[in-house]
Image (tube, rainbow over all chains, first blue to last red; front, side, top):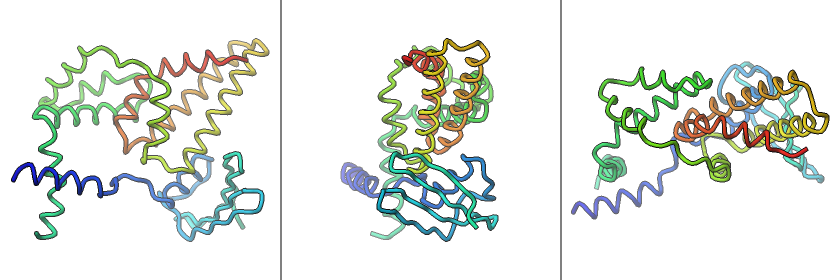
Length: 85
Length: 161
């Protein structure tokens, strides 16, 4: 019985996502704060994402403090953050 | 089988898998790493003093162990794989590391001053602090990076102009 429970447990462990995996909303909020902007919380909301023809990715998100930011990821992987209007 | 039983099974399996002495070891490692994140200026000894008395035995045994071999590639791979830091944040950190490497290259190329080297060291410490703070949910990796601080600095200084 014990080995069966163990095997079943291992199987379920493999299926269980890591509890501490960062969400996109948290990732964006961290990026904003790392670039020196205030966000007022750990996760953003109202995320809009677009990619242009050159491969530049633009993310618009709203922080818990109400400020909206534009995060631009260049094709080379450079990340810049600007307050959005 | 009820849902509660299903939820408990992974925990049970984890408990069965861990050797008897391991939970305190994990707790001590986690405590030491948390302390390292809060005070990343090489004050790990304090973590040992603040650990619970029940962990004292484990802490002592880890103190006698030789320091793990520094492996830059493994450390980088673990940083890439960790889920404690998001993809965007990893890109930001990569940009910061690239900037730091460029600073070192410039310093070596121009045979810069001691002041310039101090500035590079401050940037390095700041970046390490950022990484350690971000690894709050992956204390083992945070601890390993903290332990490898000197090696990382040496590695950075070996960058050719």
